[in-house]
Image (cartoon, rainbow, N blue to C red; front, side, top):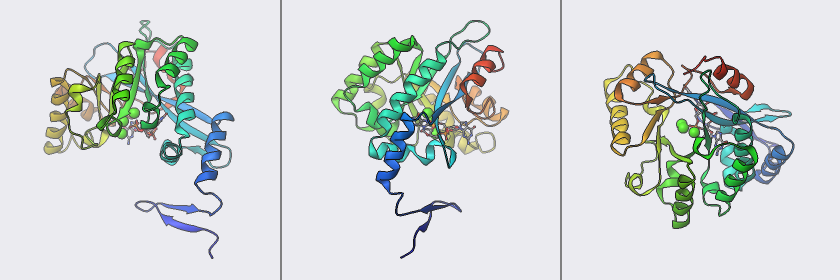
Length: 279
Ligand code: C2E
Ligand code: CA
Ligand code: CA
Ligand code: CA
């Protein structure tokens, strides 16, 4: 039998699967990565598109693998969600992001909001609220500056306890953001019943707004929907000045994307904020 198989993984990308490197081994390796301090955070700014106040940063995890080098979340988050390793990873991300961002501010002394991605597994954990309370107490990060980003798949069919948990977090002042908004084919009724405060429009809806009228119209509809529910709205994946202008014109207040800044290590982001170089 072949020692390893080469599998097609999407357009033109090939991955090598060895029999030894099965799910269990990869899971164990991932859990060790947390303990060995191999995870790192990068942060990307979210800026006000219409010249008003408010600046946020989103924490994005990377794995500094001793052999394979810097691994992007696309290479390991899905597996971590399947095996449950996302629980220790997610807790590490939350604590580390709060620890780093607690001292960050702009030249005018304005504090930043901090967005942390939270997976479905974490939200269904009974201990989520306690963990977050603990991390906030430990790091001194203010609850009303923390935002949790959940994907629509989490929010689609939340059980009663999950709704209660999210409500408690909202009461603590924590923001709840629907990430990748529009990609989940969700019934929008959840927007009325869930304690959501922000909609984050997926970058697939931003791509092309500056060149294609139909794409513009769809993005505009999503912004209008967010505003009808009186939610803050953020556009992700803004890569050009023209896209930023279009989103602002639609009434989208906040934007994130390579046009403003790429994700970067905490110290670099702290410098950028302090120098007033963003937002
Ligand atoms: P996301 O939450 O939608 O994060 C935005 C992704 O888009 C990031 O990719 C970011 O680097 C990328 N991005 C930002 N601006 C632009 C742009 O202008 N153009 C393009 N083409 N891309 C842009 P990244 O860092 O590779 O993260 C991928 C996904 O992995 C995230 O998507 C999120 O779903 C997940 N993820 C990242 N960190 C965590 C984490 O700590 N916990 C969990 N559960 N998931 C995470
Ligand atoms: Ca996100
Ligand atoms: Ca997103
Ligand atoms: Ca996205």
